[in-house]
Length: 106
Length: 120
Image 1: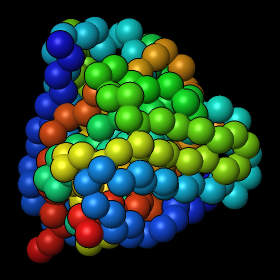
Image 2: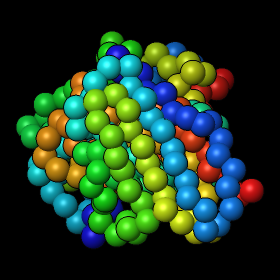
Image 3: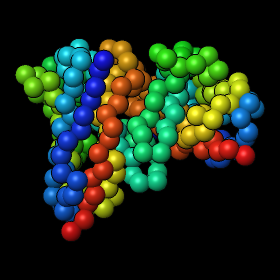
Image 4: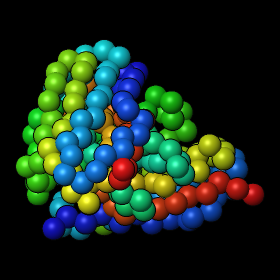
């Protein structure tokens, strides 16, 4: 099993600030890393797939980077609707998720 | 527009079998990978398993011995059966569609989720 470790567990920022979320894998996941956003009572929403590709309809302020075992989701300028929980997910072998980063309003 | 809708009992007794169905509209069930994912209350996400093509399946190794996922092509549905459930199986269960036709694909369409509680 590939374990994904996300940091920080909670990130407190203000609208307009830049958010940097980290995901580290216990072994290389090639390019099969995705990021999801989840709001309370809703299903996850795909943001980024294959490390760097934005899903349909995702604003350009969301970007993904990294390779191998270290990945980053960056939100360039936070808007009110971005405060949520974010999960990374790999499919290099059978799928696993990170434990999540909660992005909260400071 | 692709839509997925989970259905099934919201309460299952311990040791019994949890059964859910996902009804797909706006896409053919034979043209993608389809998955079940669950989320215990207040916790993270766990992949349960996939089904694709003519009913080929991949299962989470930790659930494999209790799990069956199947396709109903005429009804454009796929189903989940998880046997011998316990309180640890209490979760919101989501069905989801793969973004592209590959075992490595992420999921771009999700159902709204259905809460299943295991309790006597």
